[in-house]
Amino acid sequence: MDENASQREAPPGSGKAVPRGRQESQRGIRTMTASSAITENTQVRENPYPGQATITTLNSNKWTTFPANASQISYKGRWDDQHISWWSAPGLVVGFTGEDLAVSFGNWTDEEVLLAYRVDGQDWQFSNVTANASYQFINAATTGLNLTNSTNTKRFEFRVTNWSYGVQIQSISVSSGQKLVSIPTRPKTVEIIGDSLSAGQYATYEAISSWSWGFAEGLGDAEYSITAYPGICLVDANCWGNPHGQTFQWYRTSDTSGRAIDLYGDNPPHWNFATHPAADLTVINIGTNDNNTHNNVSAPAFQQSYIDLINGIHQVWPQTQIIIFSLWSGFSAVGSTYVQGAGFLTEIENVYNHFADQGFVHYFNTTGILQHNDIGPLYHPTDVGHIKVASHLLQYVRLKSDWDLLATGPEVQSDTLYWNDQSSY
Image (cartoon, rainbow, N blue to C red; front, side, top):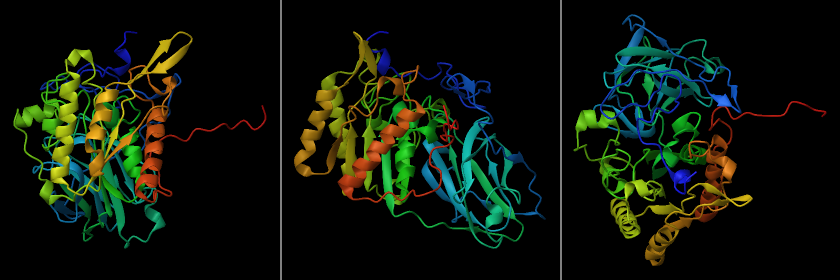
């Protein structure tokens, strides 16, 4: 393995294994989808995508339909004015009455994109969806639905798991005569900015297996947006085919995917920060792509771009607290042991010191959180690695900001229930 291998991100279109119905595309070119299994120590996971929704016809006698701009629908993460989702783990939350709920997807929904969804605090279920179709996610047989009276309001949520794919919402329908209900917004808001390490590339369920998800969802009382995309640099440069870095793209609604270029070319719409809650906390983990020699980013350029991004964030959200990660940069075999890398260590420390007197930038040292077996064969954290990073960050924030951890029961990460059932060996 060469010196940079452990910190390399795969370029888009590298033909990676992906969840059911997911195959990465070359920029601007739609490809055929493919099914794939989830393996655990070479064993195939049984039923890795439970809960497949059924395509349905919305007969007006059975359904009451609400448009995508209905005030009761709360969109999470970044969505554009056409109700198209972008970046990592975007989703929506809505309350509903009755026993049925269906979502209709528009033309800009990617083929067989994988969604995670749930009712109230039930475990995450999974379903592939496709453009120009209506899918019934909830019916009378849905687990958990019969635990409340049918007249009570239930909470429905879904998240897009595939970091490169997205959906377009056309409408949401419920049983005839029933209604959608607004769900109160959580009191805190968190922004996460990063690259593939934050987007969940190569994790079991991609976005919702990432440390970003584990941290933000693990807070329990925070709204959050994961503005992360694989291959992207901090510096505004073309890295692994991404036309811009985060110093440009973070201010835009869409990510740097092929579908974004198809729709917007090189002029994606600006994100309207004024119409969304300001982030109480901003977490940044970026620089692995800049640190790769393939992308030819100098240390001074990286450091200045980091300072520029933080200044820009602070201008948008003057009260936000900002946490910057040190880069773990993979592991190398040295002699008879393993040693962790440290990309741009001095530069990131310099960025922290630049803002130290102002008190709103904090340094999260990731050294020692991960070990070499927490990095998978494709140079990204395993699910366990992601959970370790999220857990340490949760405790860091709890101690630093005196935030209580309020995810006190419902599932955060999916399919992590492993145990030893041999009582005597």
